[in-house]
Image 1 (cartoon, one colour):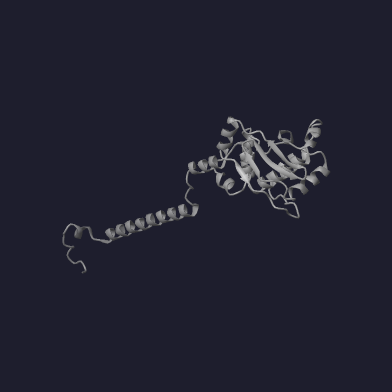
Image 2 (image 1 turned 90 degrees about the vertical axis):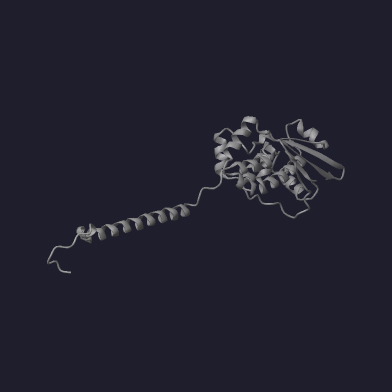
Length: 240
């Protein structure tokens, strides 16, 4: 599976507003590991400052660098990928939804069916792991906390998967190639209902026409004198 590489974001004045339900769900997991609201505010400011480098997303992990005056810090994070059974179960329920995923949507009913099969796509906060090379990380990690560089990169990751659910699937171990192959293996669409109805009406009309012709032929046979049918002369005195 090929890693997803996203270029560095330029400075922007405002944070992006999350548009998707899965983006908001992922962000709730990020909020669970943040120290407090102040750290979230600083992380959002960092994310829109343009100081976070390109983000790499691969199976079960992501990475980025953050540039600051003392140097460049490296952030690496993890999300548990689905195991083989989970991947197989998800690919089974994705039938019929591959087009939606490849076009940037994550249908609710797909996720519900996946959960019924025991597959959770959106991680919880406790499932998010990350490390940073900055000095503050060493102190924060002793207390089970994370630094604002980690949260800043997670802001970027949330923005990316909000725009494209394939980023979330990549973290969970499902790549675009597998979805494309799944879509290609799906049966073609059934004939449109109106086409079937039109065909049935045409068949019924043809049957009615044939029945009408048979009835007309039967009526004509009843009006013909049976003797004429056998070449016999009409009885004497018959009116011509």
